[in-house]
Image: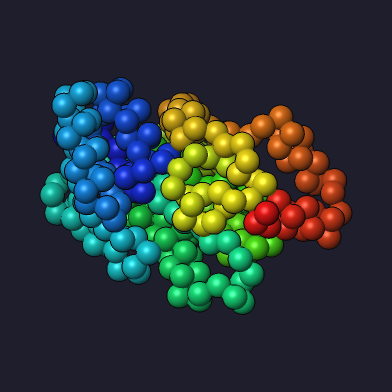
Length: 259
């Protein structure tokens, strides 16, 4: 295998499109997600259409030991990856105290803990070679607190600040860390989280366009890539630092209420 990208959450949405783009550029892939069926279909399509090599690893990264298991499988196979794309994640809509606690903890495990662990496990090889690129999928949710998605917004704030801090720590190396911050995007995320019924998801970007923005930004070593926002959403984001926090919280809550 050559020019290898490991992509989590690769079976649908942005992750699937990142895999497709990398294959279009002639890169080999390690695809990671829970759905073996979806991964196998994607593997067959990419190998046939683009002549690349694809390794499928079925793993639920919301389990605490899964990140280490994934790293060990890749390491034991003697594979050194060139790109790490931490894309897996999910959300849940509702008041924190009314949502299932186990699901919220699983969200933290997937969005934060596994992402952190995988970055830590693969980083030493990047450092040794003084090469490698990391793309972490965060969200424009990381700009603000998120009433009715308190845990999700908080996990994405972690991803953004974690990614930016690593980028600075690695500034004297050839390793880059890019933070992808999509707005509302066409994917299974909307239906899974319940956000597809809210004002925030009335207009969505395509997963392909967001993946293209993230992939290009990663290749250029950009710090942050914001993608998929409407003009009104861009104006709102620009106003966040100047908006009183109580007013901001009420605005975000209204946008996330199911109509």
